Picture 1 (cartoon, one colour):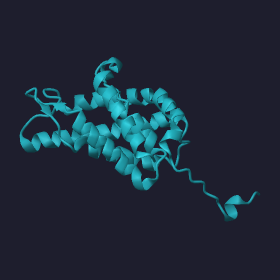
Picture 2: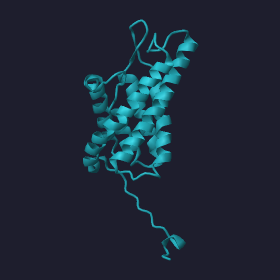
Picture 3: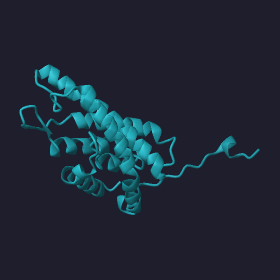
Picture 4: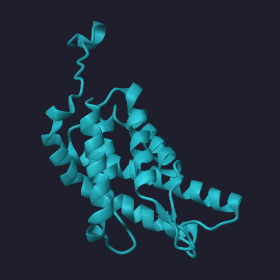
Length: 193
């Protein structure tokens, strides 16, 4: 994988989410482009670097998109999205053997699963941080359950948004320089009955 192209795509997605992401908002859900970019890479990179790629995107998201604390201050804590994206990436790595990777619909479902698991880890870690440090979570005064409901709706929206995004990213596949590996099955699997 071309890491420069990946970093540029992640930064463009983060910039879009920070600046124009409010245009895509409906109800209490805030769909983002970044999960679709990460899932696109996860479906094509080798296993050994997939988790690192997802965690790098999560780290950039934590550092460049801080949360607003209960007192109105910006809180940039590296960790919640890193671990959330790692959990989502582990799920995608398990699912990708079952999917036709270039199908936008299967990629959209994978983006939904990735986003939902990343949201579960994110909400759990912020709740844990709030209880350990005695402060509130960024969604104060709401509850974690109401935040999780909003993130569930956001995961559905991100899955739907992933269809056109992944279609566009598929057009740029040669720039990403993904390694293509073909396997040749030997033995009884090749025999025709």
